[in-house]
Amino acid sequence: MTDSVDHHFDACGLMCPEPVMMLHSKVRDMNAGEVLEVIATDPSTQRDIPKFCQFLGHELMLAEEREGNFVFRIRKKPD
Image (cartoon, rainbow, N blue to C red; front, side, top):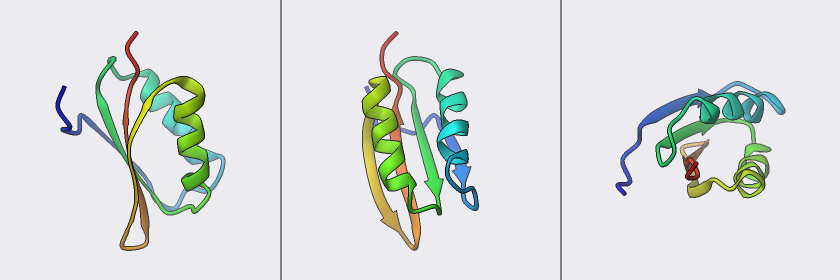
């Protein structure tokens, strides 16, 4: 598998619970093994997105802060 990004989700300006609700919909539409990059501004995503991945079994490949934004890469779990 490659670390390239297949999908992007800009959640900047969205506040809890919107980023995770919309993330759930985005991931549902992806194929197994595809990677989604999420950019968010809500600090609660630092807690909520890792919990989302852990609960649903997706791989959290990256979680970091860049220039005041929170960036995540998520690989969808195999079917």
